Length: 105
Image (cartoon, rainbow, N blue to C red; front, side, top):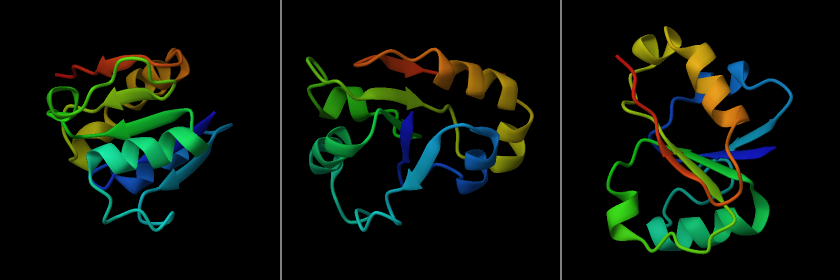
């Protein structure tokens, strides 16, 4: 899968997503794009968007998108590290157009 990390997504998470191509919005030159433009750009080149933006589903119409979206509950890398198997599993199980808000303790 081709995965895009939004601005708030901790970059070290990419090391856990072996077998996938992971890029960041910054690396793509998209760090200044707002949500709607970012989604359109991402959908043209990626399968999955990983974000920490909990308001995305309320700010954008996600109906009919091919891009799967995974919303992490927080951006704190030390806390996320404790849940890498759960996060990797969530990514692996995404289907086109899915919107998943991950819940972690």
